[in-house]
Image 1: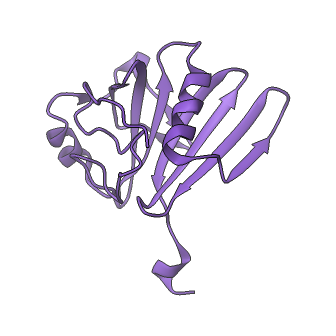
Image 2: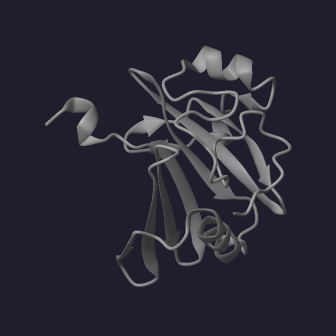
Length: 159
């Protein structure tokens, strides 16, 4: 099990730590924007015009810098009607995609799913049942985006 130091982003984002549970250190899935901002103790802020991140029709409400060992990321936090919904990390260095994927493999093992898209595009997926996490690494021509979100299992709705 590989653990990285977590200076910088106070919420530690439940990232790169196998022991992460359903909630992240300093935050919990479902927290409001104001709760998350308060708990980040200044490590997060509302995005300025040049920091705007949009995914799936949602705009990141909070952004910040996250460091995990020698890897540095821009963190974007997305909120839905029920609070903190998902977190995305984008490496600050364009040449750290492979190191990021290797760090994920070190923490979560081999991906449970690998999907190849267009040439030079690949999605890797991990599932951490103990931590209630779904982790995706979108590798697009050597650029990677890592997305963390809670697992939403059928058992919670009792199908």
